Image (cartoon, rainbow, N blue to C red; front, side, top):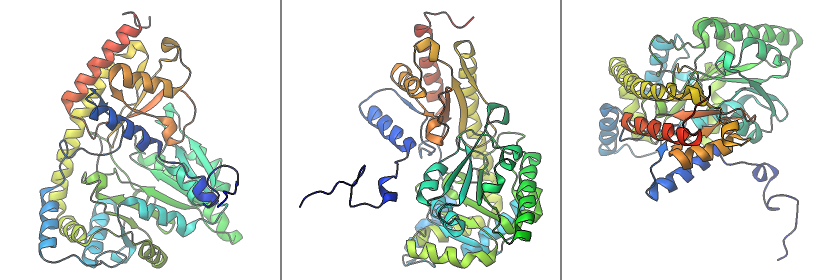
Length: 428
């Protein structure tokens, strides 16, 4: 049978499928795994994952999963999630974040991605504006999947790469859905109370205007999957905590993927005003995107014991801090070579700049990334993978899959490579 040419892509596929791009982060990570498998010494600072060798999930969660399987909990769960899980999650969020949606406002998914996708499908029509910070994780891909209009709102080093109320207000008339992430992937920075409150006021003011005009409101999707991971003296805040009036326009996303380091266990959830829940339940049901019943049973028991969770979170924060301290210490020694970073505030990421363009005689972040990988065995992700296309030397470093000793060794290799490249002479 003859192949019919329809331009770029495969003529059998939809326009959406032909335009779909694979995650740049996962592409880089795959190449790094191949290098490690070949025996090369590489520090995998790439994916936002947790190595089980470095970070274990809570014992209570594992025991609960095993018990549930042993008790025959192997059939379909309800599409919205087990009632006891929705109850324990809603109570936990009420106590921790002052967000009270009740059990009926909690919809469970197989990780945060299905409920994130559902939150976009719930509100976006083709051609609606989807606004997101830049850099930020995967939002530009979701723009394509939803046939939306891309509204990137670029952060700056001065704003810790977070979108500001002023930058959002400048585009607010075009926005149907605004997604915010704190602590932010890839930068490891968090909104303060004042910063988040100012953004909420921008959304509320616009929605008052739209209500009078009979237009659909701006919806705030708040991705807080790293919310339990904050640096010392840094407070994670939820929009409802700083602006209770935003409740009716806010969708919250969370998961055990990061907070319990269980990325492969695939349990996330959406918290939303209960009246909006039925279509989300239907979509999750049609997708079959619910977590396995044993994981739901185990999580229900664990989230009903906040004291155990808090102890786990404190220990996790300490272990992340140990790695961040080692990383910052090593990078600080390299400031004369054009290396700098933004002070970390939460999550497992450090925003780092390698201003090596002149030294290496290159013009792109990708060339710097390749040099770091090949010369120092330092595997990192450029901000292009998070929608910031300018070649400015900014990268994400993740500490979720490395030990303190691996970080120290990587910093030593990096220093040696820079000394060689600079001829032992750093910037004056």
